[in-house]
Image (cartoon, rainbow, N blue to C red; front, top):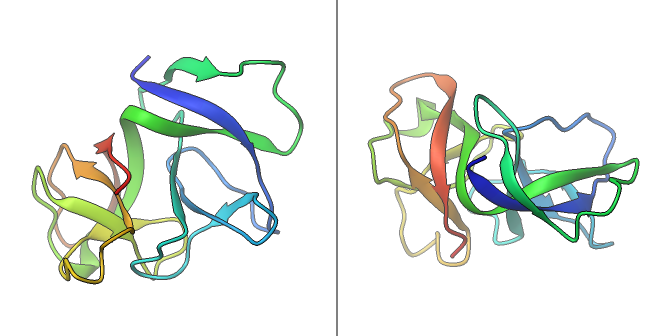
Length: 136
């Protein structure tokens, strides 16, 4: 295990899978992100790639319609490098690509919309990379 997670209710019509970037909706549930620099960003759904949650807080039997959200630690995240090459240590935020993160290029706009730091580089494509969750 590599992250600390907690189950949250999921809303929306499209399926959400591990590694997706999610935001809070009006009812307090999570849905797929689709806007760049979204300050409603809640984080990344845990369990993608080779990382699984090390700890799941309030770990009662998972309810239908809920998924573990990584709160802190390492997690694999879907990222889209078409908006800028990603280097190790780059801050990440929500992107216009639904469910994907992108590199922060406007630090003023990123205030309150950062979801973590890249732990691997990615250039000119979409992929799944490990990140360090650090909501800011």
